[in-house]
Length: 331
Ligand SMILES: NC(=O)c1ccc[n+]([C@@H]2O[C@H](COP(=O)([O-])OP(=O)(O)OC[C@H]3O[C@@H](n4cnc5c(N)ncnc54)[C@H](OP(=O)(O)O)[C@@H]3O)[C@@H](O)[C@H]2O)c1
Image (cartoon, protein in one colour):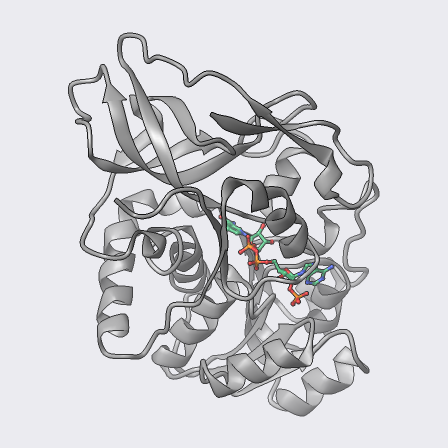
């Protein structure tokens, strides 16, 4: 089978050449192990942070097979809880088949297209939902600003906030993305942070100030949003992608200044923190989806070979919606 190893950990921006494809034998599961066939691989900004050091999971080093998260089919099992043919979510790797332990695999429903288990009902939708509701305590009266608005988490965060009745302003890296989130997803406005003065645009779009900021990017954009926060506003720290390729990350210069004077709350989270509330989140989003209030936005590249390019593209803002790789067709 084919798999990708990390050839070299880049010091600055990730490149396709930092990965190398190799062919190896498909491994045999020993007792308690499961062999899965990876159907869809999730491509996430977090993949890059794993190369920078230990995070909520082990660091990835040169020579490692690139880890990932996948929707997969059990093809051989020595564990009583998992049967051949079962569809699972799995800690896996950039490879066609992965050998996994039962603790790293979860059964999942098969009554929706499998890609939905990574997008709306998977990591993207769940991160948006828990970030807004459980961390941000979103209310209908909120003015919500969302960065990386056209990315995998951003498109669901914006639609969930709109469905709640909030005013929603996105921030994204080009005019096409801004137009799409407004025209197709119902955002009230969207700012291209690469053109003009972000502070000025934030003031124009949110003259009343911002009560809830869903931050996917950190850095200068967070610094600008802090200036426009209302007193007692909330900032959900979901990610800091503007810093993931930097060896000397920069923070906003107005922290803790504005946190104090504006009495702000700033809270980080990891989506797995809310595992016991995933079902509630999925039911909520399923109802909105069934009523046409949330659209599924996915960016699927074909073939394992496209994994390095898809991750580089995501880090450079070339994806729209949830990025993933189709390794095999849905069974
Ligand atoms: N806390 C959690 O549990 C959790 C779970 C999942 C994801 N996340 C975080 O959520 C964020 C989004 O991740 P994702 O995997 O869903 O990726 P994504 O949003 O699909 O893609 C990343 C987007 O970030 C934007 N971006 C890249 N570099 C940027 C920069 N220097 N400044 C501003 N924007 C930049 C790009 O869009 P533009 O064209 O707009 O620049 C790009 O499309 C990441 O920070 C990630 O770490 C957190």
